Amino acid sequence: MKYLIVLVACVALVAAELQLSDEQKARAKANAGACIEQEGVTKEQAMALREGKFENVDEKVKCFANCFLEKSGFLADGQIKSDVVLEKLGPIVGVDKVKAAQEKCDSLKGSDKCDTGFQLYQCYYKQHTQI
Image (tube, rainbow, N blue to C red; front, top):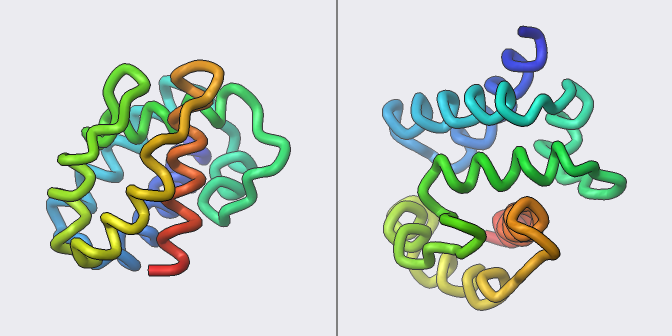
């Protein structure tokens, strides 16, 4: 339960930074909660991911990132849904900024769907810091 609270708090911080609506924040929290239960990440892993510490991650963390992106609608079967990313993030951070991030991130492919999801999460995270 502690892990769920920590992750939900992390998602809430990211959601606040992106100026999401209350509905979007609630959906992000629900997605994170479902994925933390499904993948079994630890408090330390969740905090490291939230803080952009991407070294020494294990398969659970990669699968958590994939799960979150899938539940958010950004990813399906290891394929980024560029139109959904643009539709959901464009109004929040600007279409041009999202397109620039997509150019750098959307072609990434990992060794499996969890690795692909993690690589995409990591890339978008890094691009967000530049947005």
